[in-house]
Image (cartoon, rainbow, N blue to C red; front, side, top):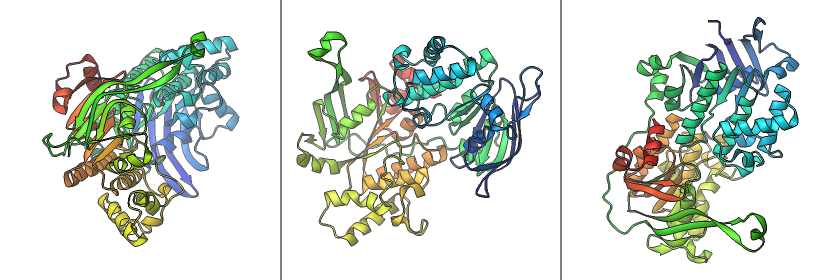
Length: 533
């Protein structure tokens, strides 16, 4: 069978420096090829360069794309911009990794999908709008008629990603370039999206080039896999063959990067570091019609939750988007109001900021995205040492700097390996290094509890393993307790002593991690575990 896309000797350079080195691969009609590798391996820029979307890049080689019917193949890299415009979205579509930056914030998602249908399929306004709603419905997004009227910022991360996928599939492309299409999705939604893409492929014969670092996804979904390291294509072949017998050392490293459990089985003894009983978090909502003139409704985000975290132990909280797990974390951090009992080392959050100050030292947080959670205007010394200015204002500059250097060394960041470390800014570090900075910032005030909000979901598998290893070591050495918020069952298995499963704001199952994940009682828990694969 002739390939749908045949790439030969693709080279991509910026300012004369090559980042992709003469790679070659092919995608057959109806095939799913996964392009895998760590951040910086060149996989995304390789896909972008096929459609001349890599700004400022110098691209050479060839990318022959088969014509429809008897039409001859075209070299995408040689097509003039006008001809390439006709290819983009109609014959080759792309799902971008970050939907918040890819979607236009000034238009509703329905309008943006309808625009694709109008331009690429020539549908009139009313049919295009109906088609946009059906495209959203096909992705499993709830209430598609209402969501079509929403702007991107009014949707959750997973809903925005599904809107992006609906937009890409609306043009009925022959080839779909999917750049981390399930990164923002929970495990069950991830399975739904993969099923959606597989169904679209079966119905239309569409081929798919999947760019990802999720090896579980590759193993489950792809037909063939191509592995990239530092701009070089080091290995490619059928998925079953590559996973069973990887030849290249880098491929073996990726496959071996699944999180491994290395925690002390600490007994649940001593005064709880965090204890909740009858915890409830509600938000006011506007009622429809004239009733909304006189009173507000109420949305229950967390309903009657109860749990404890003992010293030196990790409680994992797992569930889908909207299950209430992030709201639970916000309550534990004293950032939102709540009803019921919530004690941090025997103390209660209050409305008095001054009274809360000692508690804020005891509980710190590491956020999901280390790039957005670190101020781009502050140096490393200012970021990491900021907590000392608040909680230990009596320290002089020399003592504060010494504590900052020690905190950085604890997370594996030292000036001898990174010259000028203290004077650098966050953008000068890799994703894994930025997350280490975030951990150092949290640890410098010597807390007893860390709230970890998806601490590794934005990281490559090898970096994820390093950060989890760091957190496991710090827990062993310092007796830290963790409240771990994640949708990754593998991370729960590696890190947690106990786990609670949340659905629609309620805890539906809880207990020791092995008992809950290996012998789940609830259908919902079984679905989560099965979806993690």
